[in-house]
Image (cartoon, rainbow, N blue to C red; front, side, top):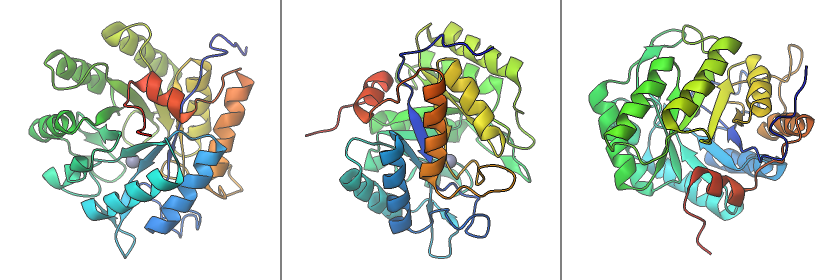
Length: 285
Ligand SMILES: [Zn+2]
């Protein structure tokens, strides 16, 4: 039964444009060079995305945490997509240890922050406590809002403990990640429990978002949008429209999320609205 319980509430769409895993062999539309990334982000922005989540690649297309590349990407997106929220990844595939946070002095609006470890498809996603503490303190220093990547329920509780200790600025913005092989599957009861937990720990009105991997991207988009959350899409998490068709672009995946917003009567948040919802600094004129 379709409900429109959250009709009228703006929905923030985040586009995760590249990631560190998909290649051109998986889908030629995956943007790899900085200019491809800027072009793909701009089309996604026009389609309705107000946050871009980015990783960068080196000249061979491999993941890197090179701050110089992040700087070029950030500057170009700021110029071409006015007001768009820039979220840079401190994820673990692209570097080891503190190299993962080397771009934080660039003061992006946001950065992803994993606060605990879990398994990924072929390895451990290692987030040791001292590194988590250091990344969080760098984000405070440079006024970067973290997006807490909850690969597990314990990560939401860890974020609450960190907020309590003043390691995170209030209020943490949590993203539920579901469908990574060997981590939390796409499970509706867990999803609802995550929502309740976020509201219990951080307050009844706090914003949250969710991402589903592969074919579950659209499933989790639907759950998040219908439940009053915000939605992440993009080629980082999923390269297909369906079993038969590759997604032609990041913008096409954003358009799919926009359609779900329309289905539930939720307007797509503008960048200014998204900044207000997340408590981010407005863009300087
Ligand atoms: Zn990412």
